[in-house]
Image 1: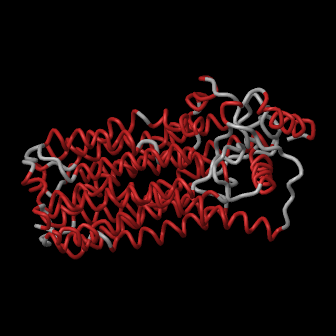
Image 2: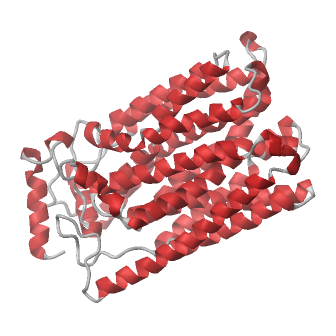
Image 3: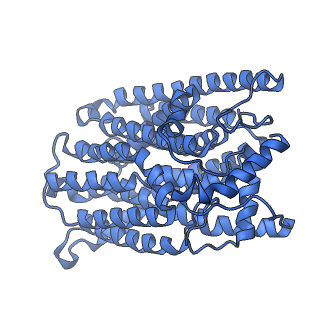
Length: 492
């Protein structure tokens, strides 16, 4: 960006409280905020330990609350609520109707009312819903609670993605998204062990063990949600009364570095044109398709893996609940390595393709090898690569999109497509396919993984072509009404 353009941006940001940005609070000036290297490290450390840790904790409990259905099912919920036929699949499915529908509005609301109030409110709400699921007595009541759960959980993931991307630069965000998502993987790893422990409360207060899964986990969610009100931070370019742990000077430094990194440190007033600008960008939809494909496989495995272990591989319910955890440990390790090295090497696509190849090998072993022990090894490979897909795509989207409202739209689009994939994943493994080892579902999952590799290669080729045009001075990438920046380049 030229000096004149820098000056225009600084002037615009300084004037926003009095003009364009009154709806999102008083803006932070871009000037006079140089920090020493030691001060800069302290700011980033505080961001990691407070903002990232709190958002990650919310995502962790949301993952537990979302995936506890399969463990409650094998612990007796299906028998008590008469979830025969497609009823269990439908109870999982209805969650995604509201989850997908309210993705886009959630990012707008988070921007307008502030993430601290918004995220705390939705987390308290879904915690109350999960708690209530411990007292349902019919299929209709369970389905209604799942609809409400989808409504409130829709506010977390896209808003958290959006918030984190406004605080970190493009080649810091990969590691942070990996840590954020790792907590969800850790939740998935521990949820089986947690459910196993909670089912031992069977008979306490006259309640079966599966009800205690929902009651205890819902109560824990409400506690963490209440704590988030004091730990979460607002967007860096605003100064609401947000119990900030950073001084004004430190927040100014954050705004400055984001402006230097990609030139979109502040939000222009909301208009439909600005919000839906991402809708005409082909790469946004390619990322969404890949995210949806990964979510289809991920949700299908999360909802059906315990049942596959019990019904197709011969393990007991207790063994299945415990054996669901170890593969996620490998997934978490690979996820962290991918996040670290993709930031260091400033590329995402090759790591994405390698992870998908690992998934393909694992899924093929799980679906077609005759020996249960070897098939369980296939689960390790599948779950080793699968968790890396979402954070790599989240980082790629954050790297290759400019503008606050476009970023809000693409965050919602990405996560919304994951919800669509979740709908398909809920219906993929059917009871009538049990005898065949769910071969049809396995083929569909393999197809999704192959499509992801093809799309990733095509996206990287297009990025190479676009960057080359920019290097030759023939194109300014991600240019919008503020003119863009001359040195902005896409990430492979």
